[in-house]
Amino acid sequence: MLAIVDMWILGIRTKDICSLMQISKKSLWKFFKKIPVEILPKYYAQVRMIGGDNVIVEIDESKFGRRKYHTSYCVEGVWIFGMVERTEERRIVLIAAENRTAETLTNLTRMYID
Image (cartoon, rainbow, N blue to C red; front, side, top):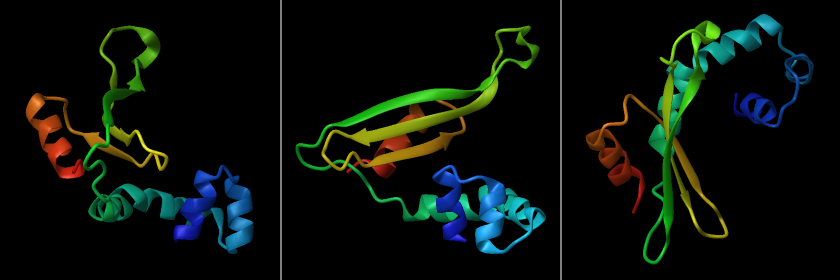
């Protein structure tokens, strides 16, 4: 399962992933549909805290989405809260936030920054 995700992240075409893993395209797409439900909670549970003494952590939030038919200024999408260390490792944490209120962002900061 992890090998499939690794190949997908590396940009390997789905056709080639199916061939290498000896699975059908239908099975691969079923797997990709499970990612938000099964794999993301496991990812969030295993994310380590970043930062520490004398380590600067850069924080930013961005909205990913698009305007439907380019007709209005309301953009449907998801807010992503990102944190990255200013170290050689450049460890990063990316979290989908429900909203970007001060309370939400403060809680995420406390959860993931040491």
